[in-house]
Length: 409
Image (cartoon, rainbow, N blue to C red; front, top):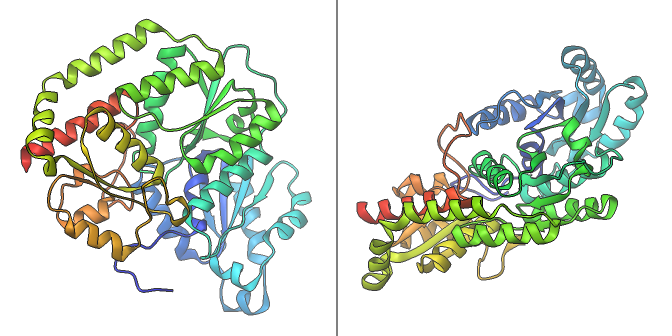
């Protein structure tokens, strides 16, 4: 393992945990050391995850490791079932059981007959050789493959959001904005917001939706599976900006066959443009007279960086600065992956323009932490009611951040 000054790229275990921890009526048991879950629980509370999946750890000691003991697992299951009566218990491996070769799926299959009313669902990818993003992808896929029941389409049109997970910054606010504009535009309700605001029952019924909205590329495998199984069309992408959100909603209408409420769309676009009208001339002046100060540099999840860049450089004519993503497998389309050495150098070299990155990077560099768009975070987020980045309200919020940053500089 290398030496890191800042938080390294999280492992697959963390991606799985951040995906599952927000699901209600479930419990999560980690077969591993106690400290892992204690630390992770605090991290989740800092991100605003409360009263959802119940988190437990079996703890393991030297004897368990040396002799391959698994008695702690069955004892923990007994305790969890008696205390919480969950519908499903998720099992999360940690690095040590992965290294010594503990067969968690086989253990769950052996113990399942003892708990007929509770589903035991093991997850893999607990080692350090898998990144957070692959963990998110595999967790979403396994949930979609195992939990949805055979259901018919809902009588009234509904939709699912796939990929709203606790590892993304402002994940709750962005999901709320998507629900708002979908309800306003098409008069439909969400069936499942997977996984930031959902329950086991909602995942079981997600096959009844009329369209799946995939807001991160890690959700595409499960969306393809649901399309094959239930015939549900899906749309991949994150709507940013006024024009970008309108185009996204038009794609939703085309895929789903739904009719958009033209008056709602017109009113939302008009309101957003009215709110931006007083600052657009100032931004245009900066772009023309001080192009270096109008450069937009971004670091974070590849889909978030791509989306914000399309709004800032496309609709507002900002210049593209230094942009990078936080996952090696997602590098491309003009957005490379930066290692710690590379992004720290990019942040230090950034003298003019707008820098939007993780809270950790911005705080270290002494930059404006209001421009945070990604994790790791350095603050508590106790509620989901902050302004979003996506949708019509997100466009106004981003522009508000940029004009205030220009004034302060």
